[in-house]
Amino acid sequence: MNKNEIKKFFTSQHSTPLQEIDDELFIRKDIKLYIKRDDLIDQHISGNKFFKLKYNLIEAAENNFRTLLSFGGAYSNHIYSLAYAGKKFGFKTIGIIRGEEHIPLNPTLQFAKQRGMELLYLNRSDYRKKYSDEIINRLHKKFGDFYLIPEGGSNDLAVKGCSEIPSRIGFNYNYLFCACGTGGTLAGIINGINNKSKVIGVAVLKNASFLIDEVKRLSSPVNSIWEILLNYHFGGYAKFTSELIDFIKTFNEKFNIQLEPIYTGKLLYAIYYLARNDFFKPGSKIVAYHSGGLQGLEGLRQRKLL
Image (cartoon, rainbow, N blue to C red; front, side, top):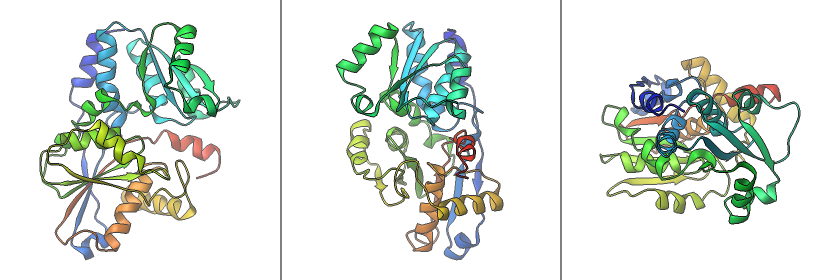
């Protein structure tokens, strides 16, 4: 692995646009919505995955780890990006995948395997205790030494990376929204915000009140104002309705910004709903963080869900 190449990639300038959404709703409500287009930061390590992996890969390289191991579902954006990063920077990668193997592989896992990632499947019972000594010791016995990155990439180093997100926005705003799955991105944004703007996470899974404690654990805010909205999950993680799909298609047609129904579709739907119901004061400026994850669309199309 090339330590200098890793540092150069992650510390070089990766600027992305801030795109205003000129929608009649926002004009009528006298508010402005902007999308921070970090889906454009890199083709394969896009959005929040760029920041979550940044310091983890630097740490692994500086400590001479040659193998990266992490966990994820069959359509995981994290697994996809980690496999690509491992191939790019010379790490061996191992993906521990929730559930049973299905052949042929879906597009996400096929991509990961083509980039050299070794896949191991854990039944759902074992997966629930994936960080236990029993499972970790079993993995060390099978694979030897490795650098462990948690599911979704969310640990203290991921939070450190995501704390750099607010400084990339470059103007004053009243609200900063992001989708929330494991809490790492939201915690980083809370740590990195240095103004009186409110940070709002939109939970993408059902029964997600546990994320409040998780974000408190991962973050160390001084004066940050934040909350997590729990009612925009559309039935649970990776679940969605025809209403959400129609919203995503209409949004893409109007503004030429691709969303997906797992994270960013739910995020933007929530903002529109709040705007229609006068959550925002007139004159408010809102930023929605586009966290990427568009690779999952191919698998959804393959399953004829889009």
